[in-house]
Image (cartoon, rainbow, N blue to C red; front, side):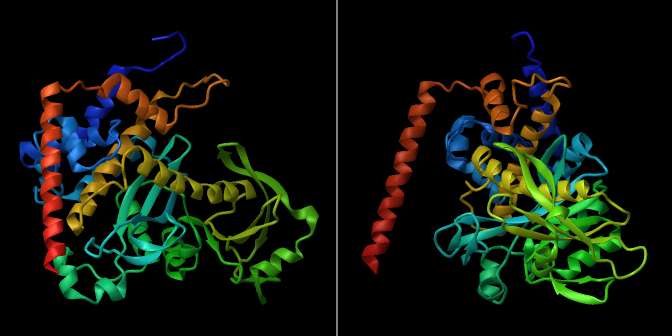
Length: 431
């Protein structure tokens, strides 16, 4: 290894083995335990599409049946594995001032059978599309960030009000309709109950508009910086008057806007102009309206803030900036470990695939965090998740499959595709 580099491939293999060991007891039988390890390594590999077919081929399986059984019928609890992933991340990254970030992401799907699918708006496409929506919780610290929980959103009319459809997708009887903020509240409540240290919660307007979420956080003594719309009204003038937040912003003198960075971006610090106004209505309360203004466009964003103790402006700005972390995690998860590559339709399969993808993403997060040097070269950026995965594949996961296996898989794949095509043609001719 070149002088000045601190990468240790042997140590990386240890971390990968530790990930498998953390969840090994959740698999009663040896076959699904071994397959789960191969599945996660496949998600981390350079395989372009992370489907059961391609992951099975990389693992040297003659067909994808073992991978499919792992997601559909094998005996293991995805929620228990989720808990193990969360515990591992907290051991490695946990800090009392960490930020919990909640947001949703869309998974574009064709057809009507995938659990939770319907035509709905998704930021993934930027428009209304046939999709599923998952609500996630991220854990963000200066040492690293990762996804620690997930919930699948079930639309009320098209799913929760149709018992036959729920049964066909394998949705448990105790699962009913819950809004996206309600799903976020479930995950945020579960985090401190599981011993997750965190001082703050942040989220976009969908979550900032929910008074129940804000009340839950205040009851637990967890501070929040939650985005709200421009029509939100807050108390000003010592709590005597309710005023729209955009009207409050218009009254702020130019001299009171302060320049702060809310975190590093791809093109340098994300610098905005910020202002804050106390909105407490009772003595001893610590409530603020935080306003962000784009220096170029003048675009405004608004946040309701609360803390159990007094806080400086730069702390609230840092928490607000943490919200971008979950957007980057969605992008990284989909681009690096195939978070959206699944080909399962049912409730169990969705949660199992997403959970194993979260485990793969946790591996990359911990690899990047443990490889950082205390006195890094300013001419070299810190090790990214994407670069961690490239190095992991080059130094640890590289496998050479024999030609016989590659040819066998090609024949098997083309035979299966021919069978599927014949079935499709027969169905069309029968109509």
